[in-house]
Length: 491
Image (tube, rainbow, N blue to C red; front, top):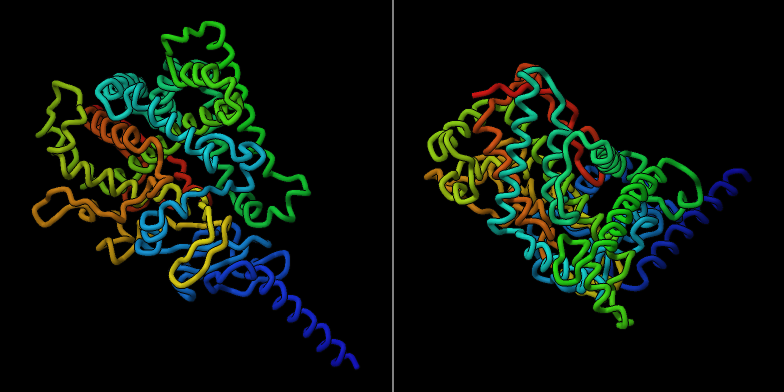
């Protein structure tokens, strides 16, 4: 009797699973993947603390395109250069939608240029690109601003007197001041307490978004959203940052000259005034605050984290640092500051910076995409609104595109003659229509900050190079740079 009861229960469970899977797939022909359980989806196949690793492991079984269920949400996962390019570039329009991770949904609610969709996104992206370019992105004016900030950073490094220090906030303040000069119209003194608090909030939120709990929440938000938990920390931090932007905007309003905008906020306020009678306009307070937050956050944390990872890698591989020093001395010397035109004569340094970005693999699963219409893809039919995870980590480590994907090797970007070699699998800024707005600015910053610092200092570790651990502190939405101390020794 007990055996019969057990078999009945087992049969009922199997029927529920099969029915749930059919129901979830009823709107299209989704790619195959592991069978989900009701409510919890592929809980058994995905470790919340290692989402990216779990997806890469599943791709070994199911191929480069497969479906997993985050709770009751179907997610199509794309792995490898070919699949990601086919989606984001060859079918750029269809895959141009954006899904907001549940940890950020309460803050953004599809507002702001990064998380907007449809006409809202088109209006905000076009406007943001125009204003960034007007304020010098990719031009000589912003190059001079970066060069100036790099000199402030050098002075802070000199003050350490070759003693050990953590470079985290040195770098975040320097990098942030570049984007601050665009969005707020001025740089901040490194000792400004409000600025220091902002940098700490930004660093904490970036790390918090990548913790095991945040990954767990992003996967199972359909259940966890009804309960309190650490996921509320991110919302609270971002709201504090948003309040700072709101105060800045209020100050700008008080002294606004419609004919002479000083910064991004002024430009947005002027556009709001121009379109105040247009009911279809997306130029409102919420989009202003959240687009500014998008630019401020992305313009600070991504570049500063890449620089920190780069310093760590250069200390672990001192022969690479030596070759960079040699090239800097030969091309630039020590009597002038580096400029962006030097990059064309410095293939090794350029290759090292690219390799730092590849190995640091900062946003391993990209910001989630979404198909904006029913989409045919590789023989499958992906329903409109389906969430897409283009795993950038799998592209940056694709063995078909890189000779030594698991090693730090600048030769990945050099040809047999030592000239710089482009690689279309280099996608740290993503690709397609959702490619990073600030790519040109970030590339300029990385080159000028790296070369200026190495022109003046040798980076000295506190440990033997072979003992330096480059394993990320957290690996979730982002790969968080491990904490370390270093010394800067004048050259």
